[in-house]
Length: 414
Ligand code: FAD
Image (cartoon, rainbow, N blue to C red; front, top):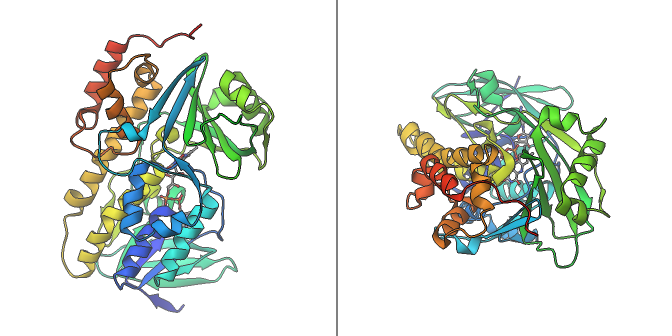
């Protein structure tokens, strides 16, 4: 078969792949993106965090995002048993963007990859990576298009941004236990019946009144529609109905605020289920390759950190790819993996504290100190790498202590 040459092959045209492709094409590299699906395609992961705006800006992708005219987002609201809390990202301690967007990913991802293409990246859709031969200097891949035709790609570096496809993790045996309980998500889009005074600029997170491990999201979009999902233990979700839609509806109706907001809302796409999405790898780099975004590590959707981590990982990897291509031997462990994982460790501590109840006790506390609110706001805005925030540098210990101080979860206010 014919061999196509490039400097970098990017596997996957999601946010991580598109950002890396745009930047590398900008700096004059021959970039080949290989994407299994045809765009636009549905993806879950619709609520962004302010921290992802800086990497988009650095990559010159902000105009492409703004052109999408998406629903602005400035915080997160939480509700449980009639008790509500609002986190406004403007309160955050960390400097930087305080607002972002809630996006329909079919449109968002397409805009980003089109922008990368406009910079000179070559993008082959409906093309799947079947095999990978890693090598420090001459890595190769075998790809197959949707007619079944295969071809070999020769390149100098591989960026795996294949998300849940996890191409290198599977092919190179890099997967490791994510050390998080396996959960299921049920989700769809609805034509909302949200009341006029509903704050569309915040994601709403609800907690099931009797099961603190079961939670909901409501992500409003610009056009009046919204994404509504429920996440919990797989067996609990399965027990809620005979099929995905009846389970989703039964569980939504079980949370008073969601039931009220969505009383008149209908799903406008089939209710999807995604199970066991948490994943991790032994390492995020090796000779001639690196793993970006979900292709490396994905924890949990509760803090909407996935796209932010994906974009950040691409933002951090690009300069190291450029140096590698220039013949240097950059320290991928010290300059990419460790610093990236420092932030994901913060999110992990928050995710664990969410499910074991510590974080819910802190978030739903009726009267938290202002400085604490500001620090929590910073992490929830995605600034999980800010060493000036004690909730970043000593997440676990601080969350333990704070939960202790906050006492039990408050009951409904009269
Ligand atoms: P992806 O966006 O998954 O893109 C990977 C691309 O690679 C895909 O287009 C795929 O078709 C392609 N691909 C796969 N295999 C191959 C192959 N063999 N060959 C070629 N191409 C291939 N994140 C948020 O930021 N906010 C949220 O609100 C949020 N909610 C979530 C809710 C749930 C229930 C779940 C499970 C996740 C959620 N996430 C959220 C996470 C988010 O979905 C991901 O973190 C994000 O999409 C990762 O981006 P990525 O670029 O790494 O990969």
